[in-house]
Image 1: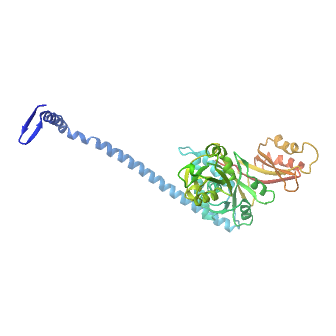
Image 2: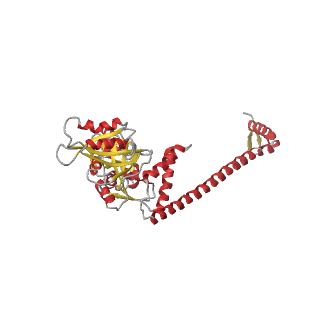
Image 3: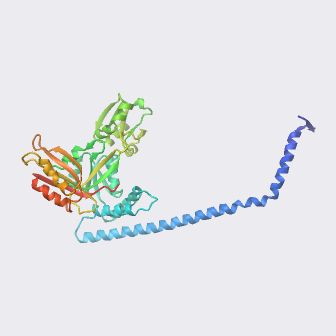
Length: 405
């Protein structure tokens, strides 16, 4: 390439030509410099629009805060009126169920029904605490699925009392030390929690509600690799719900059943080579890493919990009733058919029927049944009147609002 020397510097003629061309191309831009200011009004307009939206959100938030405060003040007034009347029934599950169903029915979006119910549940929980904070016993320790069921059903403004065993939960409520208890009753994969069912054979407690909780099982621990796992600990139900996954991915690892998933998480925290199976809350409480999430064998794995209390509830409009009955002293074939026939005659649907040993003598059984409706409202009340005529034992364990979501 041709070059020209200027003093001690050598300048490329091609580079000079390039600079001249660049200088020419920049000249028109300088002439149009004022045009560069045109985008500014658009930026200012966008900023102004956002400011307006934010101001609208702030105004809505102010109204929401004022309405929530007003609701809390009304709740305080209700509490004072109940105390003056000498009643301690501050919590009405059937009334709460009616409110939440109305929220779902009237929900116009964009928030999902689940989100709306969760938000209103917390508002109701906080307002109820202005009257008297509820004491809720549950199968603990902290970090169990039962604790999650407590929070889903009652919100966070309650005093949750973790206990080591299901029978302890029943005793805490029976004694009045807790207002209600929450215990697991059945899993969609593994069936009935027999210990809970058997407690109703002797306990005077009633079923006051149900909670359905989607169960996600996670493999958790402190190790970096699955190959470092020497043993897996968990509640027997969780081990059963993840049986296929464990058999496929960790077939030779020892499995140990413990009293709760929280206990399993504690051991995984403290023992070298120990991993646990349980919920994400347990991993958070005990400082564990989730090694593999969602290892349950079925995607729709759900556990149903009972809320137990000391009194039967009034109808809520959409109820379920749990019965305990027996045909022990009824002679002749077809005794069970005669017990069930009135439900069919009156169009009452049975959603669950299960036999359990009566614990009175060997090979003697009682039946648990879940039926649709409230025991005091036809057609179920009519059917129960007929069942009573042929049953040697008929006990209404509870008529309670069906789970909202």
